[in-house]
Image 1 (tube, rainbow, N blue to C red):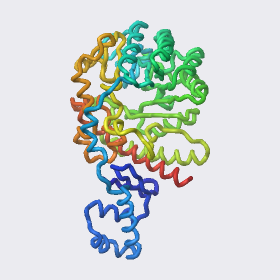
Image 2 (cartoon, rainbow, N blue to C red):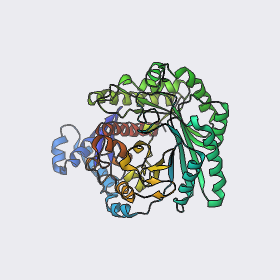
Image 3 (cartoon, rainbow, N blue to C red):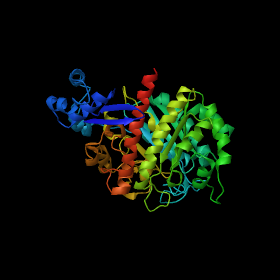
Image 4 (spheres, helix red, strand yellow):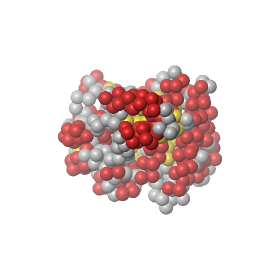
Length: 453
């Protein structure tokens, strides 16, 4: 499978099955397009002889054949033969999303968690439940040494003492079981203080700082329950926190909606505030919501991604580079074959834990009783749910078959698929369209970077 496109002056050809990317001239770009249509050399000569010299066409065809022989162009699907083995693989639990707080001190308009309630009741996870969750993870992680635990909400800092206790307990178990915990934290920043920053900088491998961008955008979508905005309170804290992280990871993470389709301005605003690790993502919501993205918005959103990518090139040359999460792509190694085929591992390797210890495939399924898999005391009882997610991959999704981005998005989010189509083996169509555009921009940025070097 071949994907050709033009972006920011580059003619880019992606060989989907091998992952090879080629930046080519107009002649090679045109010839590859004709070859992809099944045209023979003679037809190509007749079609292009008025535009290019015969000797140049011959030279280009020779170069293309060399790339085909090297399995870098028009390659066979290198993953399809592995799919049966992939389905039969043994899986272990390697990551938990601990819903440490089903409550929140903000009332974000787009919150899928219903201000932290997740279709249920407000609750805080006790130390006993959290401890049992870590024990469950250790017991079900097999020989895997590195384990991940994300403290999530609602707002996790509303249950800060339990977080500290659980980190201490996890560390106390590492040597005994030959495990290493990687703790992460997602916060809205309202309760952030120096003590929390110091602890997080010592213990949290990554922190996600929730901020939507410009003051008017953030305050409209992320107010307190009484309606006042939270921007002025959190920005100084987040700036201090990000600066203090040193070599440890963090993300300033926002959401854009129909109210700020010019979201590239929000990304650049965050960069101007000093954040160099940024993720501003499209809202996923029922189309009936007034802030939900609509199909008619897609051209504008794609235009914004192009605008952002060009500005990132400019700023990199000026020594003001920053990373945008959705444009980060590895063209050399990339994720392993299992990640390419199935993505995040929800329902198999990655599970969410409610404050009372129930297990769900991921945080976005919490509260959907159909997907209740078990609990941290009795383990996974619904093996059928686990098997369903194990078999969820790009080859199980009809919409993925002819999509050039399938090995980068790995079939997309199962929860989004279920929420829009009632099946985890479908795909959220609008999200797919935006994902394709982001992949194109990401590859273009790599081309620009290579040119600079």
